[in-house]
Amino acid sequence: MSVWNQKRQHMRYYNNIARFYDEVYGEEQELKIQAAIESLQLPIGSFVLDLGCGTGLLIPKLMRIAECIVCIDMSRTMIERVDLKTRRLENVHMILADADHTPLRQGDFDVIFAITLLQNMPDPNRTLREIRYNAKPEALIVVTGLKKHFSRKDFLKLLKEARLETKSPESDNILNCHVATCTKH
Image 1 (cartoon, rainbow, N blue to C red):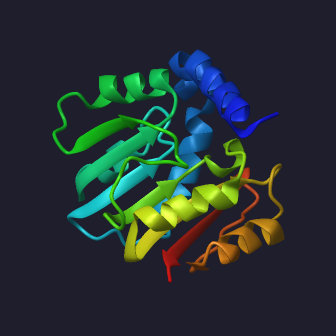
Image 2: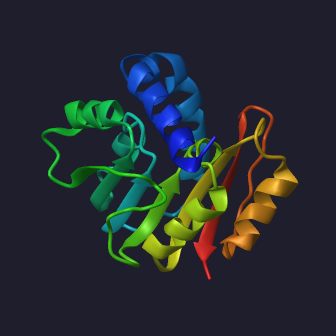
């Protein structure tokens, strides 16, 4: 299956499940988000990129400290769900785009989240290169990878190959994913 066919397949899946996503996956996603947030010291006034934002579950945790939150997802229905949740928030912006080809300038973001994204991408290395491209020097980058798709060793190897310095790889038994806090070097 071609890269674009894989992406279209994921896009259709998330378009179909968007209305029910929070009910089906919300609790699991909240655990991942909590693990990610606990591992960070988020600077006040940060420019944050939520790549593969889904329904925007991360936004409430960031909106008081971030100056700007940009949410990118390739599912139109997911972006519409974010829009419903954030209409009155001036510092949240949604973009319908592919995580491998973001329509953003290089090095704009202080903090980047890629939660439950890599396993949905045909080439996780390509996705991590795009994350590096969007990150300022010394940016904080939080990446998760589902354990059923990545062994801990393979997940850390992927991050190392992307030249992301892993500060705190988490892999507890409660989560179904590995959580890594990284910096661009």
